Structure formats: structure tokens, C-alpha cells
Image (cartoon, rainbow, N blue to C red):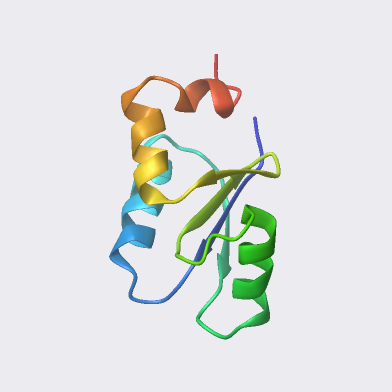
Length: 86
């Protein structure tokens, strides 16, 4: 199975939605708390190529974007492939 990392911020509804989607698929993931102004938030920005919003989601080290992109991957039937589930 692929390694999934998700940078989040407390109180972020998009973070909750992305986490809920991953949990519904029984996908193990590492949640990295990255509130504004934190070193973790800067790391997420750098790793994503400039993404400043949360969540920032990485599968096997590759940025897949945020919640909207994760949901779109699921709708298109591509998420399972990225997760190494097929």
C-alpha cells in the first residue's frame, strides 16, 4: 500500500472531508498538523510546489493537491490506483 501524508490545520472542514474519505476507504495515513505560520505548513508549501492551502495531500511523496483533487480522483476511479489497491 502507498504511503499517504496529509498536512492539516485545526478547524479546517476540507481537512476533515479529506480525512473522512481516506478513513472510509480504510487507508492508513499520517496526519501532520500544519497551522499557519508553522514549520510544517512551510514544509507542505515547499513539497507541493507552492500550495498554500490545507489540506496538502501526498501519496508516495507526490503531491496530489487538496481535498477537491482527492475527491475528484475518487470520482474518476483513479484514487485506488494511486493507493496501490488494484
